[in-house]
Image (cartoon, rainbow, N blue to C red; front, top):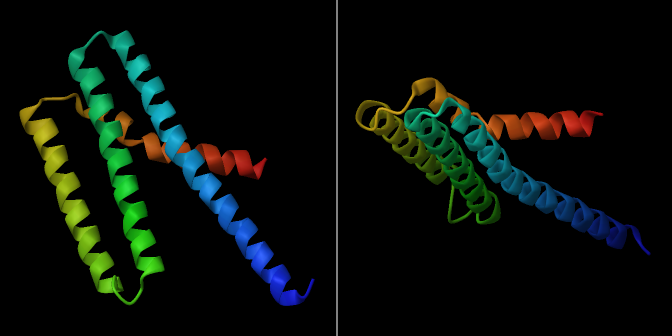
Length: 134
């Protein structure tokens, strides 16, 4: 096997591992959200449970939106430039800000529960980091 074929094989292996990691992250986001929602039921408060659920959904949606934007930027650099990524970033930030405002001001969800739900992706990334470190 020549060196070019070896490099292609290594690239394919790395790409497969990256895809597996992203799938694992996505799947675990939903598991962590379900566990946090079940834990929030102990408070017996609709505001707390809705805060955790809505925060988790917002975090997961934001994560998936960022993932999709990065994939477009990296795969089709000529069509989806850095300027397009920056614009998408600002739109995503604005949409998440508006959603948070509506949840706190109008829906009256519990703000601490909302922040607990928003931490779903952070908990997941921390878990992966610790798992790979040890």
